[in-house]
Amino acid sequence: MRGGQPRRRQPDQRRRAGADFSRADLAKAEMAGCSAGRAVFCSARLFTAQLDDAVLKGADLRHAILNSATLYKTDLRDANLELASLRWCTLGGTSMPTVLTGTRMFGCQFEGAKGAVVGPVLVDEEATRSLGGAELEAWFSAQGAEHVQVVG
Image (tube, rainbow, N blue to C red; front, side, top):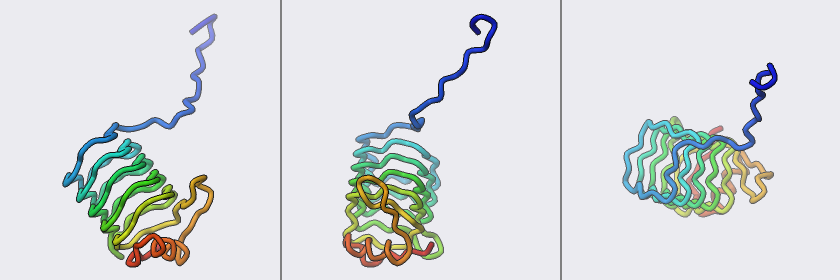
């Protein structure tokens, strides 16, 4: 308080981040059901990690390596997966899809990925091009993930 007036809080312009796992080696980690919304996994190694039923809403996974990871019913809404590698990963199933709504996916590598997802996602560097449905399926196929189905 100054001069009898309460001090006004300045709005925080930055989005508050969760735990920071940047560059962590989490290969083969069993993270099923974990809650790591807004966590930072930049350049983290999540090779063969089990992320089934995990909540990673708003997480920063830029440059992360998620090759051969399983993501059944994983919530990745509004996450940033730019330049991440998801080769040979399993993106859920038709009854337990990976939720990717609003996720930034520019430059991701998907060769051999399979499964089911919910979109739409942002696929360009400026995060202005949103794809869903058949367009998103075609985009996955063009990235080498011919067996990814969009279910919502």
